[in-house]
Length: 165
Image 1 (cartoon, helix red, strand yellow):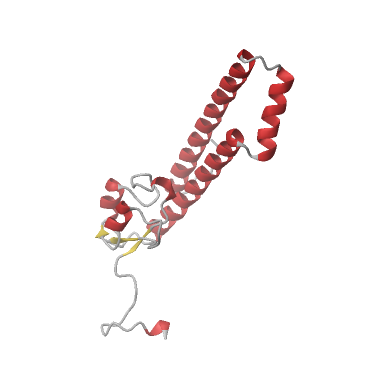
Image 2 (spheres, rainbow, N blue to C red):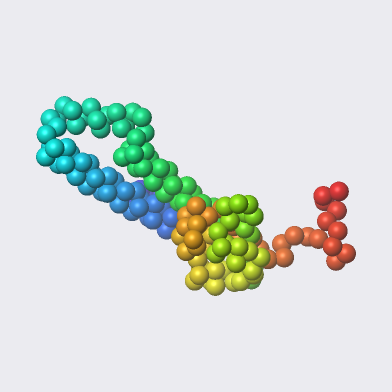
């Protein structure tokens, strides 16, 4: 792991460790998949030059093999960046007692997120059942929901948000 300054917050160190270990795992899976494809092609009678052309074409066009690897790598990087950002928000608002699940209400909303929408809970409670995008909902890491400090909008008691007029 890269050497980080001593004052690097723990949530950033944790996110980097997770990202690096997940990327290493993806690389190992890719290596095994490549070995399997090469062995199957050889057994099927392809020579090494044909196999090389096939793999280079997949790489060039973003075919299933390299396209999936790229997609998984990109997803892992996005998740890692989101983890760091989430950690920064939680650290900045460590005095907040309750966090509310905010769902993106469109045709892609999964039942788990719909059920959690608007529910205020402590951060520890959310961590136990799963933060948005942590893979503990039907939508897994594709979750687009967020946690926001409960009651964070500064709306007067008359219920009229004058900032939108």
